[in-house]
Length: 254
Image 1 (cartoon, one colour):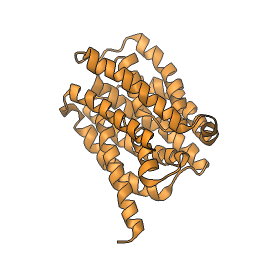
Image 2: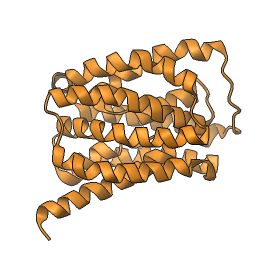
Image 3: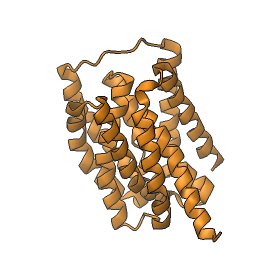
């Protein structure tokens, strides 16, 4: 079998693994997928970020569609979050290479992982909260645009999306885990779309890798999102922590 075919299959398998994880948790596209491209396939960091951002659009859109059908998507939060996140993501993606020269993407990702693990470990292992019921008081709607502006800027520069958003939705806006995952999928898809456009303009996309990743991520994301409600919430929470720890290991190995 030709080497390029094996490489394409390798990208597809990696995309399916990442897509499945994202469908269940909305976490892993960048914190797991991008380090995988760097470590497993030897891709330069900025190119890996751009490629994973483009693949992430398909992945998150597929996941969001399944969550919408399953009723685990909060459209009012998604809209208010996305409006400021879109321009912020575009601008930081447009200047991702320059940002990487000042603050290495690897360093930013490592910091995000550490903060994410600490916060979620405290909530899921130490506190072990009871399942929440979805409520939408006004303060959640008012706070969503501010979170969108801050996290949109981080998404554009690093392609990290699901992890930081789902943590913000769970820890700050206090959404139930399934709704946090579903809403994260939609706002990530929208923000990553504009980020991918910016990366395309800067030639930060590896097209052969993208061709292999897209079929895999579509399949994996659809399967994960379709079955998210069948997974016990505590198992979902522990899964998020394990994914983040795996991503941290990949970053340190690289």
